[in-house]
Image (tube, rainbow, N blue to C red):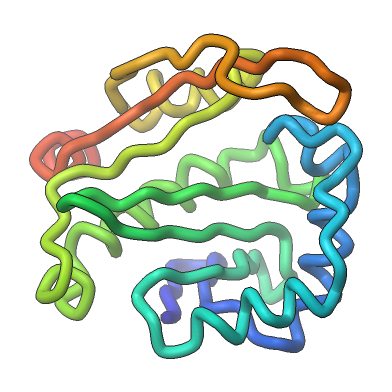
Length: 182
């Protein structure tokens, strides 16, 4: 998978990306907004296996590049006519500069229109969540993407520090996406 728009590239992760993913995923500062203040503790071999397991599959683990530099990652899977993505701009120099909104819109357009995906899993909506504390993400989803807040899962899990975490669930339908992004 590869999408190019202006200076942004979203592409399938390769084995060569495993070291970068390992660095990001094990950095508590990078992973804190996802609820992992101590990082994920992923071994490099496990990340390599994760990448290899997705080769040739619709479910993808991807690298986000801006101006040719890896700055983040995203993934997506499918179930019941819905896509379930997650994303993270990991390089702090690229946060709070409007790239997140652009990347999300590019991804959503791709998920709703890609012929290969939709011939096997017709997508009617995209569903994702964020931690209650991640106010910056909520602003993007509500004010810039126009997503609907469809649920709150209170105290759904304990983080690495033993704190109960609450997730806010968002969704956007195919029709709403096309109307709002047109």
